[in-house]
Image 1 (cartoon, rainbow, N blue to C red):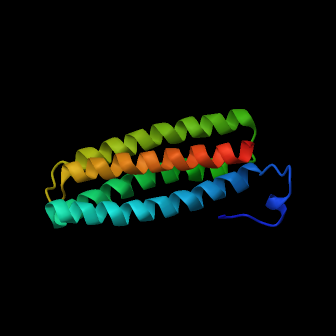
Image 2 (cartoon, helix red, strand yellow):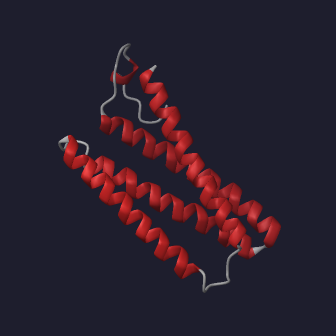
Image 3 (cartoon, rainbow, N blue to C red):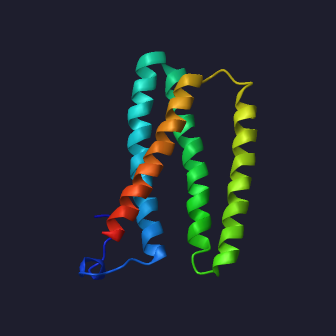
Length: 141
């Protein structure tokens, strides 16, 4: 298992928030890498280079957005709860603004397939949510 120390194998071990976030980050990175390779290959097979670029852009944009949230959580894990929530909310608002600017800016370019970008983006969000759910569920078992 990724990020497992000897201590984590002990019965009844409850991981710290930092251990949990680092495990999620490592597993998500592997999931994104696999998705980028598979999505890029499929996109290239369907539409050539524009399909490849679309899939890679979609995975990259979603990865950056999800990574920003995870980075904020890692940086604020030791802060009091109310400050943590304020920083997370600010991070989400910043992420929405950045995504809006990125997607509006991409409209003027035509080097990528828009459908591949959408599928790569949605696929990366699904991978992130699945990794988060499975990782958290395993720590509670």
